[in-house]
Length: 127
Image 1 (cartoon, rainbow, N blue to C red):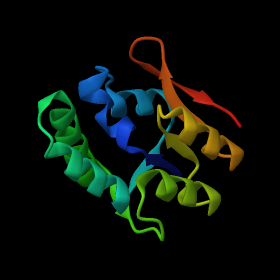
Image 2: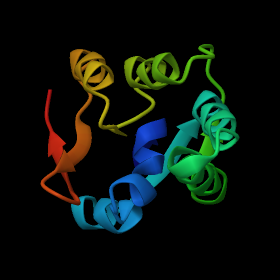
Image 3: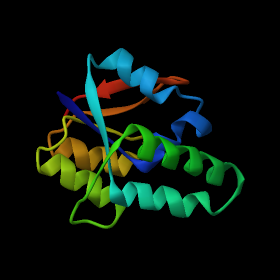
Image 4: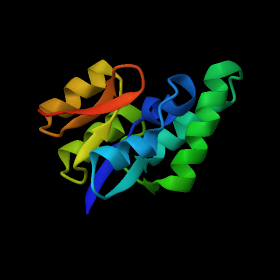
């Protein structure tokens, strides 16, 4: 089974960018297991307390992380570092993110990145 790690901003895409995240992943990949580091869920929880559009997006993202993803423990407590840890340990086949510095770090770890292309479609970038 293909494992897909989701970053904080990926889980906020449905509200912030009107991306049907899991429909797009279904379109790109035959079957997959979505995972999110505990650090991502914690970052979303904290952001959800800020209110406003970002708070709403983070709240929806937190719900998606806890309802649709397997939450995994990592050594790293910072969300981006936790994603890179998963990529470097070969425990994930793809990472979903729109964060350019994180994307570059994941590609350097030889893991493909799924990110936004166009208005609300996702595409795969190979390392």
